[in-house]
Amino acid sequence: MEFGLSKCGTVYVTSGRKIQLSGITLPDGAIMPEVDDGCYRYLGILETDVILHQQMKQKTSAEYLHRVKKLLRTYLSGKNLILAIDTWAVPLIRYGAGILSWTLSETRGLDI
Image (cartoon, rainbow, N blue to C red; front, top):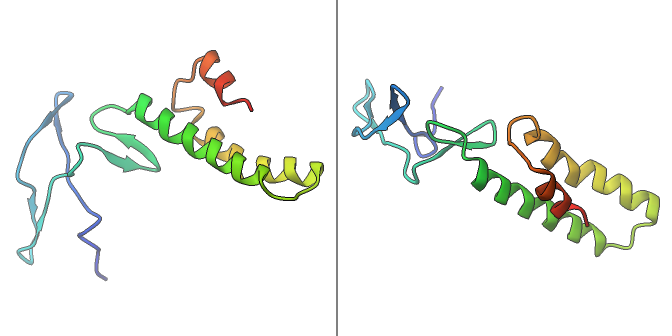
Protein backbone atom coordinates (compact mmCIF):
# COMPACT_ATOMS: atom_id res chain seq x y z
CA MET A 1 0.00 0.00 0.00
CA GLU A 2 1.24 3.48 -0.85
CA PHE A 3 0.32 6.79 0.66
CA GLY A 4 0.17 10.02 -1.33
CA LEU A 5 2.87 12.16 0.26
CA SER A 6 1.68 15.17 -1.73
CA LYS A 7 -1.35 15.37 0.60
CA CYS A 8 0.55 14.66 3.81
CA GLY A 9 2.14 17.19 6.12
CA THR A 10 3.36 17.53 9.67
CA VAL A 11 2.63 20.01 12.45
CA TYR A 12 4.63 20.00 15.67
CA VAL A 13 2.87 21.30 18.76
CA THR A 14 4.62 21.36 22.14
CA SER A 15 2.99 22.82 25.24
CA GLY A 16 0.25 24.37 23.13
CA ARG A 17 2.62 26.21 20.79
CA LYS A 18 3.52 25.42 17.20
CA ILE A 19 7.21 24.66 16.60
CA GLN A 20 9.00 24.96 13.24
CA LEU A 21 10.83 21.76 12.23
CA SER A 22 12.01 20.47 8.87
CA GLY A 23 9.64 17.50 8.62
CA ILE A 24 9.76 13.75 9.12
CA THR A 25 12.24 11.50 7.31
CA LEU A 26 10.54 8.27 6.27
CA PRO A 27 12.31 4.86 6.13
CA ASP A 28 12.56 5.02 2.32
CA GLY A 29 14.41 8.37 2.52
CA ALA A 30 11.49 10.59 1.50
CA ILE A 31 10.77 13.62 3.64
CA MET A 32 7.24 14.47 4.73
CA PRO A 33 7.25 18.30 4.80
CA GLU A 34 5.64 20.63 7.27
CA VAL A 35 2.17 21.98 6.45
CA ASP A 36 2.57 24.83 3.95
CA ASP A 37 -0.17 27.32 4.75
CA GLY A 38 0.09 27.09 8.52
CA CYS A 39 -3.12 25.13 8.99
CA TYR A 40 -4.43 21.69 8.16
CA ARG A 41 -7.82 20.06 7.78
CA TYR A 42 -8.94 17.41 10.22
CA LEU A 43 -12.37 15.98 9.39
CA GLY A 44 -13.10 19.07 7.31
CA ILE A 45 -12.28 21.59 10.06
CA LEU A 46 -9.29 23.94 9.67
CA GLU A 47 -6.89 23.66 12.60
CA THR A 48 -3.41 24.58 13.77
CA ASP A 49 -2.82 24.16 17.48
CA VAL A 50 -6.40 25.47 17.90
CA ILE A 51 -9.48 25.41 15.66
CA LEU A 52 -9.58 28.39 13.29
CA HIS A 53 -13.16 29.47 14.04
CA GLN A 54 -13.26 32.70 12.03
CA GLN A 55 -11.77 31.22 8.84
CA MET A 56 -14.02 28.14 9.05
CA LYS A 57 -17.13 30.26 9.58
CA GLN A 58 -16.26 32.39 6.55
CA LYS A 59 -15.66 29.32 4.34
CA THR A 60 -18.75 27.53 5.61
CA SER A 61 -21.07 30.51 5.20
CA ALA A 62 -19.71 31.31 1.73
CA GLU A 63 -20.22 27.73 0.54
CA TYR A 64 -23.69 27.57 2.15
CA LEU A 65 -24.83 30.78 0.42
CA HIS A 66 -23.32 29.59 -2.87
CA ARG A 67 -25.28 26.33 -2.69
CA VAL A 68 -28.55 28.02 -1.73
CA LYS A 69 -28.23 30.57 -4.54
CA LYS A 70 -27.45 27.79 -7.00
CA LEU A 71 -30.59 25.93 -5.93
CA LEU A 72 -32.71 29.07 -6.15
CA ARG A 73 -31.73 29.45 -9.82
CA THR A 74 -33.28 26.07 -10.64
CA TYR A 75 -36.88 25.52 -11.66
CA LEU A 76 -37.81 23.31 -8.71
CA SER A 77 -41.25 23.52 -7.15
CA GLY A 78 -41.54 24.93 -3.64
CA LYS A 79 -41.60 21.56 -1.88
CA ASN A 80 -38.71 20.15 -3.89
CA LEU A 81 -36.71 23.36 -3.43
CA ILE A 82 -37.02 23.15 0.36
CA LEU A 83 -36.08 19.46 0.27
CA ALA A 84 -33.04 20.24 -1.91
CA ILE A 85 -31.86 23.01 0.43
CA ASP A 86 -32.35 20.73 3.46
CA THR A 87 -30.43 17.94 1.72
CA TRP A 88 -27.59 19.81 0.03
CA ALA A 89 -26.99 23.14 1.79
CA VAL A 90 -28.04 22.83 5.44
CA PRO A 91 -25.69 19.89 6.27
CA LEU A 92 -22.75 22.27 5.77
CA ILE A 93 -23.91 24.35 8.72
CA ARG A 94 -25.13 21.38 10.75
CA TYR A 95 -21.79 19.54 10.52
CA GLY A 96 -19.77 22.30 12.13
CA ALA A 97 -22.50 23.57 14.46
CA GLY A 98 -21.20 21.64 17.45
CA ILE A 99 -17.58 22.62 16.82
CA LEU A 100 -17.71 26.22 15.64
CA SER A 101 -19.03 28.94 17.93
CA TRP A 102 -21.74 30.80 15.97
CA THR A 103 -23.31 33.94 17.39
CA LEU A 104 -26.98 34.73 16.93
CA SER A 105 -26.19 37.59 14.51
CA GLU A 106 -24.01 35.27 12.38
CA THR A 107 -26.74 32.67 12.08
CA ARG A 108 -29.29 35.35 11.22
CA GLY A 109 -26.90 36.60 8.53
CA LEU A 110 -27.11 33.18 6.87
CA ASP A 111 -30.91 33.35 6.73
CA ILE A 112 -31.99 34.20 3.19
